[in-house]
Image (tube, rainbow, N blue to C red):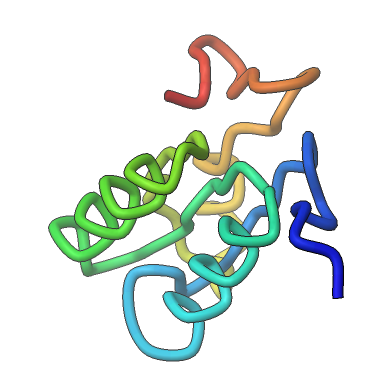
Length: 92
C-alpha cells in the first residue's frame, strides 16, 4: 500500500461535518490529502474544533454554516472558486 495521500490537491465539501459520521468522513478525507470545507448548522464550536484538527494534519479547512435541507440557506454556502479559494477568502 502506498504511503502517499491518494487525493492531494482536492477540496471536499462535507455536510454534517461537525459531528458523528460527517466528522469521521471529513477527517478521513483530510488524511487522504483533501482540504475540507466543513458544513454545519448548529455545531459551530465542534466544526471549528474539527477544522483545527484538520489543520494540524497539514491540510486547509474552513467551517461553513448552512442547512442543506433549507433551499434559502443554500445561498449561504459560498461556492469554492479555484484551488484553495472560498469565494472571498482563502480556505485557511
